[in-house]
Each structure stands twice: as structure tokens, then as C-alpha cells.
Image (cartoon, helix red, strand yellow):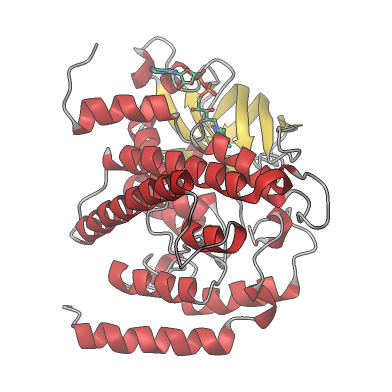
Length: 397
Ligand SMILES: Cc1cc2nc3c(=O)[nH]c(=O)nc-3n(C[C@H](O)[C@H](O)[C@H](O)COP(=O)(O)OP(=O)(O)OC[C@H]3O[C@@H](n4cnc5c(N)ncnc54)[C@H](O)[C@@H]3O)c2cc1C
């Protein structure tokens, strides 16, 4: 069906009206911590009532993931309609109904590589908030060189026996299931011996140990597999074909980190400068700061235009592919700059760590968190390697 502009205009009005009626007033305030966000799954306690109401209202409409098919718990909407919903939610500062690696990472991989049975089971569990997924890629000896991973899965007839260790598993101690890369064929060249397995973390032999970060919080864990039996039906795609799935999933992770499709816009630095530093005759008198902010805003505008172009291409059926590395690189480096400038404008107050006035050191903690942005999902250096090879076509060293 061809959508006309009029259809979409009417749709936008309907979305805005629905949001007015259904978005809970108490959620206009931004979340204060990870506990103030709905992640779904079996392990989140004390979920604020309005957060659940908001999730359920969206779920009933299929708006948790509006562009997935209805049979998977989505809304069966087009990407354009889905973008309109995200934009209208952003206008009122609405929170995502569900934060989920299932939505942003595993879902797209299952849609492309999963069997119909797997899609029906796992996608519905994601959209209904029943199962929270975490990512089991990195290992102590395999980060940027991910294909060097050693966690092994031995074929035992009706199941795999998994042994090994993952590291930096975001929210590993809160996850229900983990999508993990495992080595099924140690005899093959390293990229060809990897398989993509779905593992219930309640299975005997799976354990996690939290890792503390410099920011003081601990949203990470090491994940251990000690003789874990995983049914064969939990393999996605072909045995030994996991690397292709892993790479495809990473493009979605990088788009997510790079902010593609995310509609929530942070407060502009110019506005913060006006409030924190002050203006003379509507002009920021600190010329150095002015020039830094101008450079930053110009890069933001360029990034936004490039993302819009990629979204249009996605609507025409073209995957972002290596472009996702460019978004990830630019957006996370920009985010670091954004917080460096915010700290500069805040002055000494930005260093406060525990006071009530600083909201428990929110700015300093977020500033530190942005450093991890350029590491998670692939480091900036690795993104530059991909950009040089796959986008610019430069020769390998
Ligand atoms: C906040 C956060 C969340 C994360 N969440 C998860 C998760 O949920 N699941 C998961 O599996 N992993 C997760 N990770 C791990 C992340 O994917 C790895 O940290 C990342 O891939 C880098 O690997 P590494 O830490 O082993 O560093 P290394 O690969 O050892 O890199 C060390 C340094 O060497 C540089 N380097 C390495 N290779 C090259 C090269 N070829 N060319 C140029 N420079 C190079 C890197 O850029 C880096 O500066 C997370 C990491 C962070 C910070």
C-alpha cells in the first residue's frame, strides 16, 4: 500500500492525541537511575506502577516495536509510521516503553536468520517484556579480536555442552537469557568455527559475577559457563555460521549506540551555555567556548542529516551495513565532546560526586560513562578501521 502524506498527517495527529491521553503524568520527569527504566524480564523488582501502565498501554497497541509484524507482538506498521510514533514520543519527552537488547540487537538478527519457530517464541517474549536478553560476545582474550573467542560448545547429540567465560556482559546479573557466540568447530579457521546460541541463564552451570565501574555503579558482569547443557534447537542459523549473524547483529548494536532511530534529543549546548555561562546582547562572550560549541553543533547537524539519509535508505530496503560503524564512531565521539563541554560550563560544581544539589553527581557520572561509549560495541579505532576499509575502500595494511 502506498502511504500518502495526508494518511501520515492524520496518523501523526492520532498518535499525538493518543499520547496526550495515555502518557502517565508522573513519567514526564526523566529517569533517575537504571531502576527507573522498564527492562522487562524475570528479575526487575519494585517497578513503578506508571512505568508498567505505560508499557502495557504501548504493548496493547503493538507500539513496543511498532514495525515488527503483529504475529511477533509488533504493530505491523511501516518504518515511516514507526518513525512518526518515535518523533511524537520524543516531542513530549516520553520514555521508551521498554529498554531492551532484545528489541535493538537480538530481534533484527532473529528476523533475518531465525527459524519461524524461533521468531514466534523469542520475538513475542521480547515484545511482551517477559524475557530480558543480554549479550555474550566479549571474552577476556577476545574483544576487538572477537573471532578469537574460546568459549566452546561440544556436540553431545541432542544438546551442546558449553564451557567458558564471557566478560563485560552488560546487566549480565539481571538478564534472563543470553545470546552467545561459541566455538563449535575448533579445527576450522577461526571465523568459520563460531556458532550463535541462545542460552537460558537459569540453566544449571551458568553464573555471573558483577564488575564495578569507575562511575561507582555496576551494570556489568562476568558470565561463566560450567558444563552447561543447551538444547540443539537453541542454535540460530547454521552450525559454524555464527560469525555472519554476529556481524549483522553488531551493525544493529552500532546503530543503536549511534542513535539511529532514537528520537530523544538532548538539551542543546547553546541553551546550557545561556543558562550556565550567560549571554551579553544575546551572544556568548567567551569566544573560545563559542567556537567549540559551534564546531560541535555543526558536526551534530551533519550527523543528523547522514542518519536521516540512512533511514530513508532503510525504508527503501537497504541495510546500513558499514555505515553503522560511521554513526557509532561519530555519535560516541560527539557524546564525549558534549559532556566535556558540559563539564567545562558547569565549572567546579561539575566535579561534585555525592551532594543533593548535584543529584548525586549525575553530571560527573554521565561524563565518565561517555568514555565507555567509544569502547562498547567496538572501539573507535576499530570503527575507523572498518570505515577506511569498507566505506573509503582503502587498502588493508
Ligand atoms: C559500557 C560497555 C558495555 C559493554 N557491554 C558488552 C556486552 O553487553 N556484551 C559483550 O559481549 N561485550 C560488551 N562490552 C565489551 C566491548 O565490546 C569490548 O570492550 C570492546 O569490543 C573492546 O574490546 P576489549 O575491551 O577487549 O579491548 P581490546 O580489544 O583489547 O582493545 C584495547 C585497545 O586496543 C585497540 N585496538 C585493538 N585492536 C585494534 C586494531 N585492530 N586496530 C587499532 N586499534 C586496536 C582498541 O581500540 C583499544 O583502544 C562492553 C564494553 C563497554 C565499555
